Length: 156
Image 1 (spheres, helix red, strand yellow):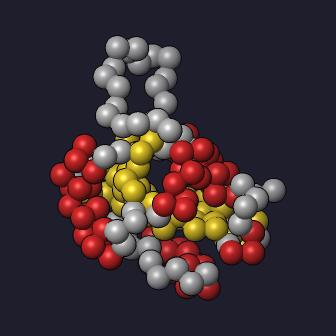
Image 2 (cartoon, one colour):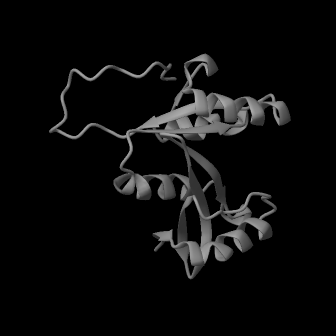
């Protein structure tokens, strides 16, 4: 049984050790929200970074020995009830885009990104031209109006 856990900043060294052991160069920082999937130890992690009024999902990583077992999906689905903002963005390499589409993200054209997200995307794209921008929208609750505008993206 795996448990989703939101880490407190004092626990960020734990996720940073996990990232380092897995060969991922990113590090959790104090302004981020960090979630992990654990079973005695961290088996998957992700970070959510605030950028102005938007949120960027980063560092989605699953233990290399446990990949393709649905742990990334379990982590993303496990945090869904904890996400309070309506939109979350991420930049994915082409080979993992199908994973994000499977869990409810939509692909976007970069020109539709909000300015803070677009600025970060352009910076990342200079290092990796194969990145694709995606967005996840929190599902509407029954109390929300059905006439909300649809997002500008292509469901694939």
